[in-house]
Length: 224
Image 1 (cartoon, rainbow, N blue to C red):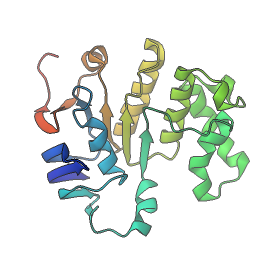
Image 2: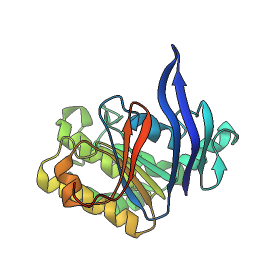
Image 3: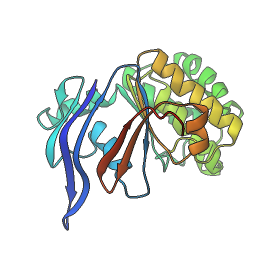
Image 4: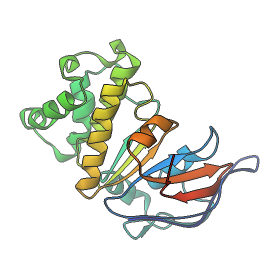
């Protein structure tokens, strides 16, 4: 589903964000992306949702080479990808409900039909009672849960999560992990960037480790 072949990313000034990355992520697979700050985790995720293109090598999503697909095709690709951003990227002056509904607007879904899909998910992530609250009035943890609901509402084929549990207590972190693992069970590929070693021990899975833009580990740990 996701394939990297000899991928490198360079930014102005000669900074090498990623170097010679080779990866295959299958349907229904869950993998943690780990590494120190600046290791290249966010750059790796950005390549998958076509926020940037590789400087070298090939990134393919569902056998589509991201270097050659037209820019008009990118929005259609992104409909299949749910992204949980570390900085949320929410509409601060809109309500919780309207932020999540935005992901359904491409289907021209009526508000009543949207409600039937959104409300159960808001309950799952523990933010239902805030559904009519303006986002700017929420705490960081509450915004995190809104961002998670928005990313998952379309049942995406690929879920990219950048520190999705960073501002959550253990109970809500467990709820989020349950939703992400359910996505895998439904055939979605899930990549989760995290520093949380406790979470990785509790929910062991494939680990993709980056260090200074290089892939230094790819596999399943015997003991974390």
